[in-house]
Image (cartoon, rainbow, N blue to C red; front, side, top):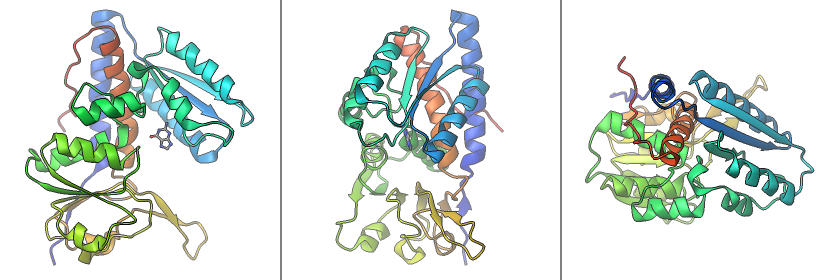
Length: 300
Ligand code: GUN
């Protein structure tokens, strides 16, 4: 049986971070500029705390400034909006990320819309979503951007490829579809109401799975040779009680059919933070009218 190439997102992300660090050092030398990332965490969600810590650590490792803002779980929407307004005005802050999910008294849409468009390194602001849709200069959401980099590294030119995106979230599915369309793919967005999901998947040369359902996509849903990008991170129970992380794709059956596949963990996950750093670097350049150099992973 054929076995797919495993796409090593962890290694690719490390190379990308190394190149970002080199570009940050150049920015500092040429313009006396250090990009700054502000990460805002409201409450004490354990997973969010880990994400926020990692974002800060990796920003500093890349030579950027990192500012962590913590608000209590009881913070009001007005308090959070005040903090965002301060960060919007702060010239040391080039990128602002408000960690989601937010406590229920706070409307995430109001918060996202309050972030300055130029500092919206998540790319979640509706203006950035619109710019991406019409082909303008947008901040591109980090996870889809990371997926696209892995795809281009594997395939090269994506023009004409049949791409199926499973999932229609604002964070992954919709921007992923917009990016693939921009690359001249023929794009299908499939979701929980799609009739015969397996048939739609079988048409794909590129399959991006981002539905949050553990091991939904089976090997026999795939066309031989397809490139599979698995965005899902789901914890499933194991006999020892510790649980195990799996994607939205059943890896063991998919690896027999696909041409290439991202593992979980170690596939898309590490690319998300690397792309957050890339967006912060890009935001710092754009806000000062500095030409944005092309950042590509350092050679191995
Ligand atoms: N929570 C989980 N993923 C993300 C993300 O990409 N950005 C933000 N802001 N919060 C998240």
